[in-house]
Amino acid sequence: MAKNILICDDAAFMRMMIKDILTKNGYNVAGEAENGMKAVEKFKEVNPDLVLMD
Image: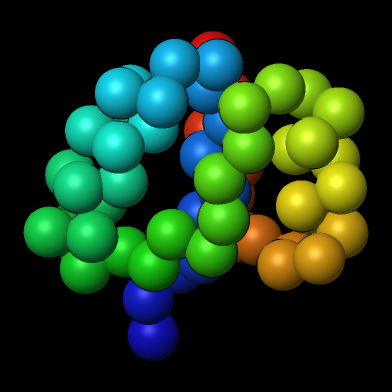
């Protein structure tokens, strides 16, 4: 079963690059956020296994 990952980065380009790398390697990107506050909200929604923050 693929792990669910939440990506938090203020740069849309970096979120896109990280998402591309993760999905190509079999991970599921459960959500994305552009700042910490939105990441907390998204975390409550998607309950990820891992959060990547910059």
